[in-house]
Length: 422
Ligand SMILES: Nc1ncnc2c1ncn2[C@@H]1O[C@H](COP(=O)(O)OP(=O)(O)OP(=O)(O)O)[C@@H](O)[C@H]1O
Ligand SMILES: [Mg+2]
Image (cartoon, rainbow, N blue to C red; front, top):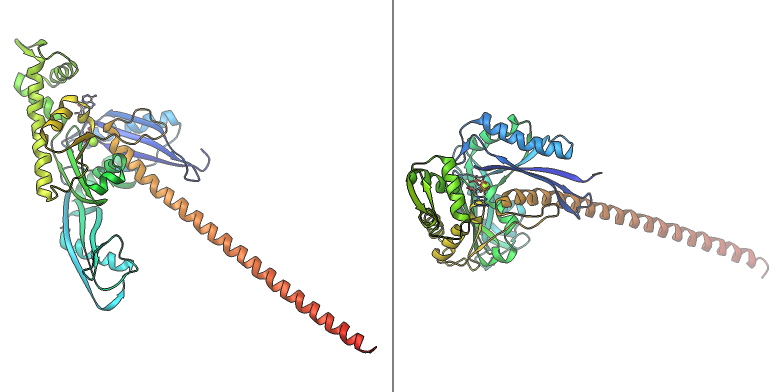
């Protein structure tokens, strides 16, 4: 491994704890996944920690599987945060200067600070910020106003926030499993890093991650993250519906759901308790619940105010979107163009499944930061080498000038000596 950079990623899902070990080569040119593990998640439901002890134990299991395989100790981990307490708020801020001046990075920071004052309440922490619609002096929208001159700077600032106490609770559970927290990433943003192209984000897209207990939506336009929302809705509801309708246990519900979605024959029947049920009955129950997903997606896009902005439509990711019935129902009923979004494949992982989007996205986010550090150091080194070379050239030039002066003096002396004979 030499001086390669090793990072560990943790996604605490309602159904699975997913953990990755990733490696970036010393020069930043190669990214590899060394190990990926998934273990059952216990002690968490609808993204609420019900038993910190059980959840810590599940995380510890994932950690130990990686440690055994790679023969190392994991000390620090990069953690994903999501859940229904995540909220999205946007405001427009205008800065007016006394006279025309060059816009600096500090002016952008000032916009952010003012937005924070307005949008962040009490026990909240900012997970992500995005500036968009930036203008100098009411001129057109600019990508980056730094370096431009004007008397006014304004823009929309979008903040993604969540309860600090929720972050602290999750951190505590991870620390209890024997790891320090290296960084925190926002789940929906991570999923978008793993699945969406620049073109998707530029033309407008909503990425929907449907997991076991939560459905997350993140909307992009002009390559800017403009809205996020999360609802406690997921695969667990299919199971609880079947438990309720047929008065069966969770295990039985899981079994018949599995049977129904893998059957090709809608007329096929099976016995539940003393009732004869067809595949079609089960699929109908699944579709009724999927209709809630459709309503949630449609309402969220409407509430965001960005209907009509989604040139690239809807991308679906997360474990539940593997179910063909779910995918087909959403595609057929949402009224937008819908496609499945898989995480980009990275060396070391053969099958990048939709439930791995968050984990892979956090890895990309963390390793990109490392790559930027490597590039910055490279540039600094190059600059130093250039300065050193310049120094040597200058010294050489000085030496040459000195030699020329000595030559001149000698010639003068020779001339003087010659003159004695003339
Ligand atoms: N092959 C599959 N067939 C059917 N359902 C699947 C399949 N794989 C995963 N699922 C469903 O996907 C869900 C788990 O997805 P995922 O791993 O994305 O959730 P999670 O990250 O643990 O939960 P959350 O994001 O809500 O915290 C479960 O409800 C499971 O039943
Ligand atoms: Mg998830």
